[in-house]
Structure formats: C-alpha cells, structure tokens
Length: 238
Image (cartoon, rainbow, N blue to C red; front, side, top):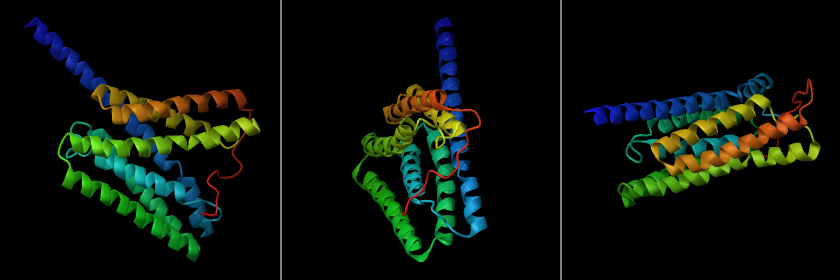
C-alpha cells in the first residue's frame, strides 16, 4: 500500500509538472503570437503593407497547422496542449495574412494568396497521407518528422538576427522581450516533450532553447542604454 501511494504521488507530481510546462509554453507562445499586432496596426492605419514581408506569417501558419495536426488525439494522444497552442497560433497567423493580402498591391496580393493556398495544400497532403497510409503509432512517427522539420526551420530563422547582431555589434534589430519569450517558450515545450517522452517535441525545442540562450547572451553583450528598434526586421520584396 505504501509503495502504491508513493507511486501515485510521484505520478501526480510528474503529471502536474508536465501540465505546468505545457501551460507555460502556451502562455509564452501567446506572447509571440500577439507581438506582430503593432505592425499590423501600422499597416491598417497606412492602408499599405509598406515594406513588410508576408512570408514569415506563411511559414508560421504552416508550422502551426502541422504541429496542430501532430497534437490531435488521432495522431498523438496525451499532448493536447500542443494542439491548443497551435490552434490559437494558426488563427492569429491567418488573420495577419488576410490583413496583409487586403492591403498589399495587386501583384503581392496574388502571390500571397498563392502561397496561402500552397500552405493549405501541403497540410492537406500530410493529413491525407497520414490517415490513409498509416496507423498508430506509425502515423505519429510520420507526422512527427514533418513537425521536427517545421520547428527546426522556424527556430533557424533567428540565425539571421544573430549574424546581424554580431556584424553590427548592436541589438537594434533584436527586441529583448521577444527573444526572452522565444527562449521561455522553447524551454517550456522542451520540458513538456521530455515529461511526455515525445522527442518530436523535445528535440526541436531543445535546439530552439539553445538559440534563445545565444540571443540573450548577445543581447547582454551588445546592448546599449536606450537602444530601440528603428525599423522593422521583416522587410523584403516578397
């Protein structure tokens, strides 16, 4: 009886820690999801996309949709917090993309619509193949590989910023709170993946956590008092 009670208490503590890590990851992810709001307020006020690029939001939507599918009970039972965070993220990214399309010039509007349809087609393909060709647990493995590729691609994007900070010796283009939120989100989902014993979640978020640490170290190394971002990072002709 004592051993059973001890095992029950350990399981309860383990479950609580796992849930806490997942909730923390959801909260930090929400901070990242709302961070572009000032950018889109500016777009709406000016009724122009200006020089902002819509590509990062296409990538983010694709990542959210793939991770959302991975977190569904039909693919990966027991990691519902992966499903919830990516459901919210997908809604945010879709809204951002639609605003971008509304205020973009005709050529960019058509290009963004094509990319959006392409992202949906890619997700539909992954969903269809995983349902028709795979049964659990092979289905989880199949979708998991796409999840890892998607997450690592997303976490690789700060490499550009890291390189820029080192070259310019300035954190002008690397907001501290955004870097901190990214690090905390990666750390939280790394812990969640470890608790749930899901390497498809823990491994890419572990990589993201390391990149987050690098960003924070660089911020500490190169930050100067009263330094503020002066222009958007997301500039391109896309």
